[in-house]
Image 1 (cartoon, helix red, strand yellow):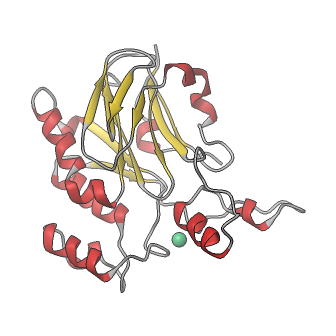
Image 2 (tube, rainbow, N blue to C red):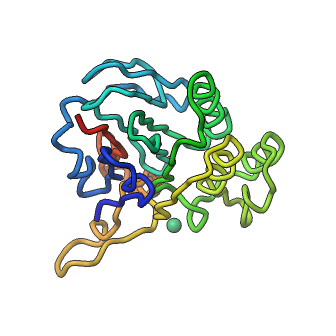
Length: 240
Ligand SMILES: [Zn+2]
């Protein structure tokens, strides 16, 4: 049940997908797996310009390329993956935007990077599966930080007590930065389930790997396995 964006699907010459628990790398992207740009995500705002296949990018939370046949992805397990494609299919990008990245301005940083020789109005963007306000409860202090630091209406940032809406914050920021065509996959990584199959254990009914869900289980049972190495890829490639 890999999720897709209608907007990115509409761009000729691009293949993309949002991974899940059973297909951490979306099946459509498997043929390019060897070309994946490798980065260490650090919840920061650095975006690396990728020139060639299997590039070692170092610490980075965003990747941008105009090279065909090079797979870009971000790894998430509740954080927000953002995929971008220019409407002419000549340039793509992927951002890892958790609450830290959103607060620190990774979307604004990406727009600034494009401003030199490009225009966000020529791009489409897609917001992927992430922790959603149905489940994403945070400290009151963090909500206050968001409200104090971001010029975004409170009802968008904080739709209910101690809930943050990362996807709505991202959409607001994308629009403010000039990205007008924005798709939202809409799934919550914490509670979205797949169709149940007879005989499968309950934890396999969840559609996505979730850091939150995993931490809760580990708090009750320290022997419960970590999600290390099991984050889902959201990615895209310019077809060669
Ligand atoms: Zn949820």
